[in-house]
Length: 131
Length: 131
DNA sequence: TTATTATATTATAATAATTATAAACTAATA
DNA sequence: TATTAGTTTATAATTATTATAATATAATAA
Image (tube, chains in turn yellow, red, cyan, brown):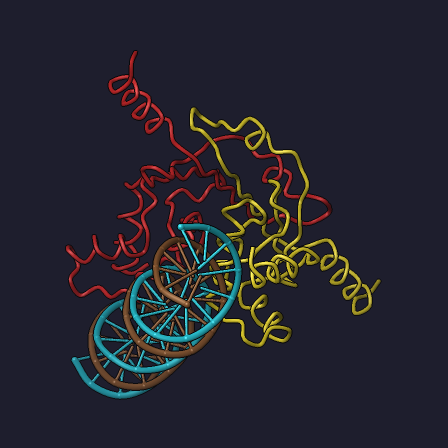
């Protein structure tokens, strides 16, 4: 465990925003100006392989990372673009089998409009509309 | 619906392999040598938006497409790299709500070793081993 | 039919994420 | 101290995807 790798892990730990590589790099660069982008990539892959973090492909254009390596699902809000953790039980992840196939990892992505954005647009309608 | 778009749709229809953009392009190029890669991209996006096909981000490195637009899950075999359809009921997709968030789309990806590859390695062990 | 318009396709270039490579560095060990 | 292995850095290369502009096609109006 090197200084750089620790910095990546530390940054992720306190972070529930599921940052992308670019965000991680941009933020750590302030504190460690010598840091290179390639190091972020390799560090993230090492941390993923040792099971300390998990990788999300919820947004096609950029990969995001989650400091919680335990299997859980994710929600992507198409309005505010936030990624939220979803804690529901998943029979497939628990049993580790589906249709005779051995399951080692599960990634479930829900896309839609989050609670907060739903409320926001409802209020807007209320203010602008008749009621 | 243009000729090119129809060709893309036709190629996908008979195909349960969930081909990537590159595969689609390579195959259609034989029959339609004038076809361009950009057309494949735009055609696929048009077909996706009209709900005729669905897009899979199961492999980070390339996007794949499924002619079946109905919500269902997918399994990626880390051994043979095949993508298989998984037909199990998904409460979240059915209810369209989770934790107060409105769900419009669900993508669930299972990663592991498929039925077929499991049998293959078991047989190999049997032949090579003591039993 | 011809002119006009809108839309689709193509080819090319641009962008952006990621990976590969090689050199410099670090830390551990002989 | 010398050597080794592994890490970081900087740079270049690769690759998927998107944007752009020119061309082609089809649909409609005159």
